[in-house]
Length: 156
Image 1 (cartoon, one colour):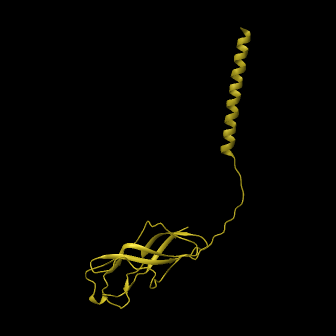
Image 2 (cartoon, rainbow, N blue to C red):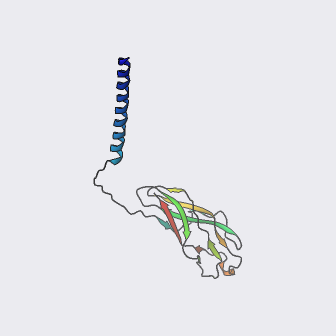
Image 3 (tube, rainbow, N blue to C red):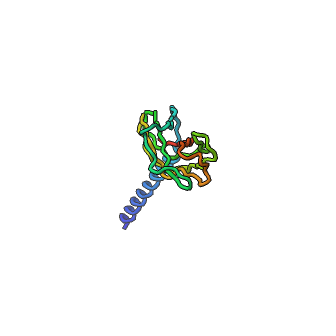
């Protein structure tokens, strides 16, 4: 009977030693500190809109009073990496090339876009139904071209 008690004591001591060692390792892991140095370099990312030229693209619908039409923009990515166009927002009211007024033209911001533009590439992007014209537009605005200043947002 004495031998049985001695074995039980040895097994209990070994289990307690393993538990203490495991706890000490966890404590050391969570309480460790360190220091070091790092460096980073930033570069400027540029993207620009360009004027459309004949043959670039044409909207699928013509702009008429009381209706909407597609807006077409041309985006140039001069960077050495690709970017994704994520939004296009109008910055000031559209103007008519012939000076007619009131134009009745408005631009609806486009968000949630996912248009990839390769490094060094220029891409023509169509924004469906982004431009509309009020029925109150001046008759002199018929057949003219409208300039719509926009701000584009891209992500790398």
